Image 1 (cartoon, rainbow, N blue to C red):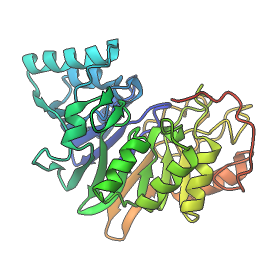
Image 2: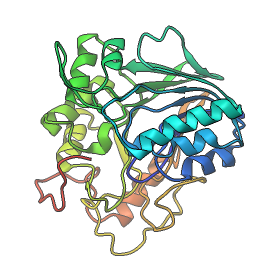
Image 3: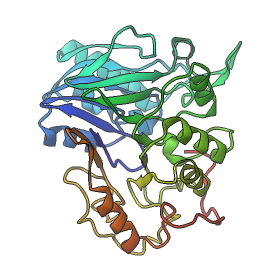
Length: 338
């Protein structure tokens, strides 16, 4: 499995041989290039967690690309989303289905009644429930209250050869996390791709949310998928501090270096990065870059090697939040959300 550095957004590719599955496609052609590099001739499952552009913006281009066939596109309707990106997704599904090479599309929730397998990998749908997915984003629900696109975004736990490996938490907020706790969902996984890029979880306290999220997953590795120097300035220091408090021994890795950690006066070296696509590589902004997680007889292995990433951080990053005590610091350029 490869957690791709796409800048501000999320994309992950799971493969076993020449068959792949994809969870989220950020804007641009990076996912298509990675699929080509891997020699993927079929996408068994393409999951779009929710309608935001940084998760769905490139899905249409992948769907209409006839370089490979597609099994099922999984996504939920969002009647509140009136964007060109969301319309392009629908038109791409319609076009590819008519031209051939796409089996079909379905809604996705915890009650779909089937398992999403990709060779020896299993994509377990952890959220949303059919109630939330069927309701969709709404300003006022009779019992659930306000549901945003983030609240109902799809959470997937990826198992590699029957071993839990990575929790892809999309952009879930505190409302979604509370719903997961109420049904006692098993969120535990060695790797957590932290929700909302380490940004604010709706109107909830970010530190409390981050601490509880981390406690429930109990990760060994926490990944923040971010754009270096982006307007949202993620991950927030309060979030990183809470993750470190809840999982003091976890390895924390941002796909690109955060402005909270480094001045970005010049390009950073990239000799520690894994081979393959990484959006920050060309500008020297990668931290861990794209992270590959592989199941072996010895357990899960990572590329880049985590010790090499830790050495890179200690040698080249000015004030890494993930390694030094996190002190209160001014939030230059913080935006209210992402």
